[in-house]
Length: 288
Ligand code: GLY
Ligand code: MN
Ligand code: MN
Image 1 (cartoon, rainbow, N blue to C red):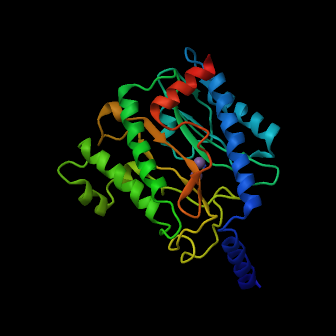
Image 2: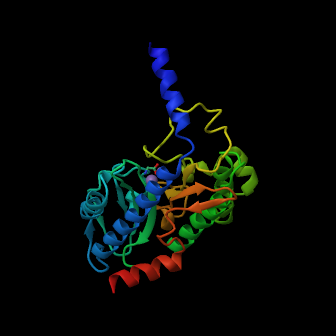
Image 3: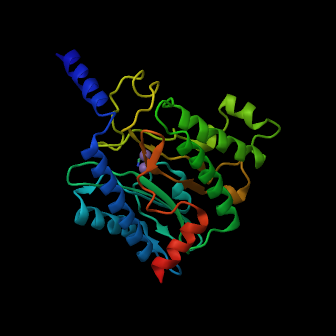
């Protein structure tokens, strides 16, 4: 019996890999509602005074409850060094001016499909030069990752494309010592600061299709109708003595929900800005 249950779980997971029109429309709505939730957060984020992470969590959840069923997973409201913890869900700190806020949150619709979006925002509305440099490295990696999402590509391709860019940036900062980016990449040295994979399938579950076989998912090929996250990040732990002091405690992730189309991809969460300048302009507009 246990074997049959497992077989059924695997079959259902694999049937969910390609979404139909109804599912895609629902995920599109989830992303749109999520964008409105992020806007709500920017409006409560104090540019001069600290904002409790719990207030950020509650603000986003209100949007999720009003427009959807709930949040699709525990919102990660990670300010300052908390952003270096991949899944900071305690949310018991404060976002202070000068900090980055890593907000990873998604509205789950009433049909139970969820978005999974991350933006890393300068709490006071302006990136410092150092924050911007790290941000732009992650942005470049995400661009490379998204560009690798198309039908016929290997599932692993977008991960590799994004991680190579991160390794190049890390090498340019001198963090690999005398090793080249290519050499460090082969050895996996960048993973000290990239920590996680670059994405996953998205749908009814935030980590959708998790019971699919490796050969159909991780070792599989992208097909039109699949929806996946592209979410590279860089995380410099506060106590990481292998990086310059000014980098310690900095965490950046940018995460979007990407639909594989017949000839490439569509970013379903493009309603939220990603470029550093556009993030700053958007925050300034929302705060009037
Ligand atoms: N929000 C969980 C994840 O990005 O995988
Ligand atoms: Mn994700
Ligand atoms: Mn996420």
